[in-house]
Image 1 (cartoon, chains in turn yellow, cyan):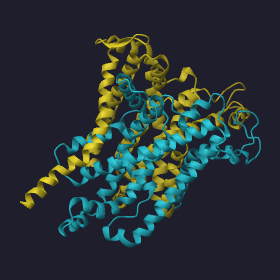
Image 2 (cartoon, one colour; image 1 turned 180 degrees about the vertical axis):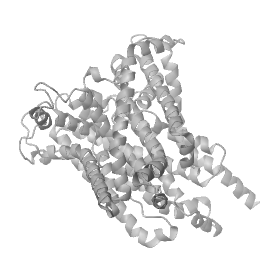
Image 3 (cartoon, chains in turn green, yellow; image 1 turned 90 degrees about the horizontal axis):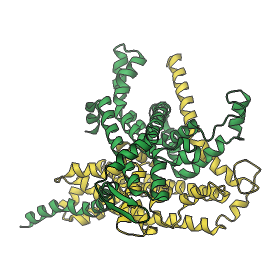
Image 4 (spheres, helix red, strand yellow; image 1 turned 30 degrees about the vertical axis):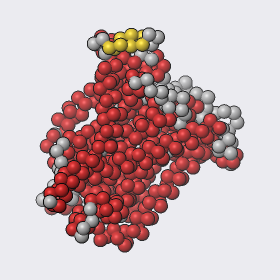
Length: 290
Length: 287
């Protein structure tokens, strides 16, 4: 009797443990997404309100009107992701294999920016790139920037800001996947007369793919929806889809268009993840997950 | 080590150093300009050293209120998210049940959704239900998007823990609740502390989701963003520096407690002393 009731209790317990958290996520994550699909198909105007009407035209209008911002978001986020990878891979490699007892200290330095306000760090970049700042002055004096050239309010400024803000999200997963690699595999490769470069290409890099995948997603996803960098470091010519969604929602009160745009953004990201996983090889990723 | 190896290592070190410098410079500027003797509203050029902003960091009542709101929101939402998240992680790691892998996927979905979508979707719901946005809706939003981080962090901790200790407690007659309270919780406490720090840091720093669900309520990041047009007052830099010091201090305390504990009990459990950097690294890697 006692054993049976214990068994049943054990079977029920996980559901009990899960229930409150799951309920929160269903109520405030899943239902809002479903509701957003509903809102995106409504018609009306801010004065009289909106009502549901299967109004798919919102989607086609949104695409024809805002495809520039969409493409720009994907482009900026893509460039920033590649730049993050180029900067973070050697950094992660160094921390994983060469840092010795300073490993944890260096990891702390990587996450340090997280503990200063995101908006304030971006304001710092405004200051660094300012027209009368010493960076702009120096570049002008060595002729890399024309005398009326600007750093702030340009496309490179926005991309640099995005790259900066999401760099730790690339570096940390790369570090974790590099650190897990059994170094004896490399020794085996070099013992079998592989050059250092070949060993890196054939052993280290393939084993680091899960980290590259995770890092790219963690960089690309928030970067593609970001609007703070474009708002603070760019002009309307650099505005991304996040800027459009925010102003449609909060200033213009055009809820259906805003909802349709965020739905399109999410679907593009999901398709992107799928394609990216195909390119990197599903087998590699499954192995790492297991 | 051959000469070429040494050159390679050296080059790698320089690259790593430059990248860390890139990460560090804006943080340094935030701290530095809290000491800037700026004339006028703008705090954009260095005009000499002063401590005057440090004398009255809370003089601006709007700013003080915004920071107070941010701290209260962070504390409340962290308490809720950590409680809910710890039990979710327990269920996902310790029990096999129907729908486990689906739940696993679902918990990580918010991490794969851009914040602007999360914020906009939640606001659309509140508008549909005619809920007034403000303090409460910010807390609801923050709990929603920090739960996943909490689950990921605590999960990693639970997975590294030896189950036999819990089984031993049960064999000796403790029920699930007692085992959880007396055995599991003390062992995963460092992970819970890291998760709480992470959740609080994310909450206190959030601009995007908060901007959608704040209504008339001001938070620290909202205040800063609003102030960018007229020039961010140096007091903001002071408060950000204080926050940085507090967080680093809390992290140091967490690590110190773990070090002290690890010498005694943690070794028995086969749990390595955790480190916030590593914990964060693993959490983000899994998310």
